[in-house]
Amino acid sequence: MAESPLDLTRRGPRLLGGGGGQTRAVALSTASTVVVVAVIAALFLLAPGSAQVRHTFFSPPDLRAGINAVPLAQASAARSVGLTEAQSMRYVILPQAIRTIIPALLNDFISLQKDTALVSVLGSIEANRAAEIYSATVFNYSSYVVAAALFLLLTIPLARFTDHLIARDRARRLAGAGR
Figure 1: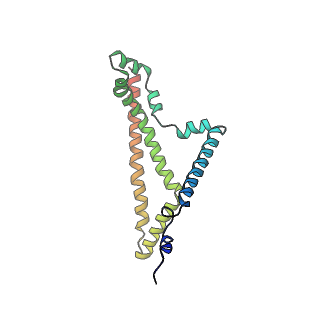
Figure 2: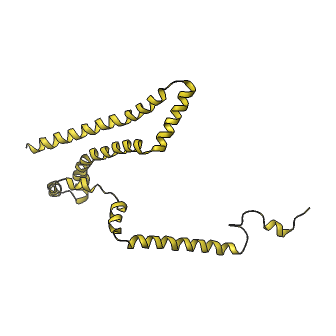
Figure 3: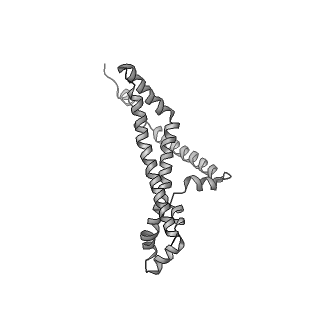
């Protein structure tokens, strides 16, 4: 039985295909999405305390604490020997700022690793379930030990490296204070 041309046009998805009302529907859904997003943005911007939220969560990080930790005399000394502001930032201030902030960043990384291991219930449940299945199949409980060892292999060296950097920085500061 042959189909009429009318039946052939009704087949298939009509979202981007035929139908005169499709263009209108797409335009209407796009316009309503833009309106809803604009209303949510306006409510966020007009809410009390939104300036503090924007500053805390949406301002980009810029190593400010490390740069502020470098004494102003360092920048003045760099400028006095003829370095431009960009050169003094690159060769004098930023190396000192980076040395100051690396231990704090590594501490944050270690905390993140520990918190992730504690908070990610689904991941730990999944790892324990995989270890349980493996141990039930082979009657070997080494998979639990391997998971714990991998966690310790990641955390302990980073903690020791951070302690080394902090001790080295403390020794440098004390040596500079005795001059």
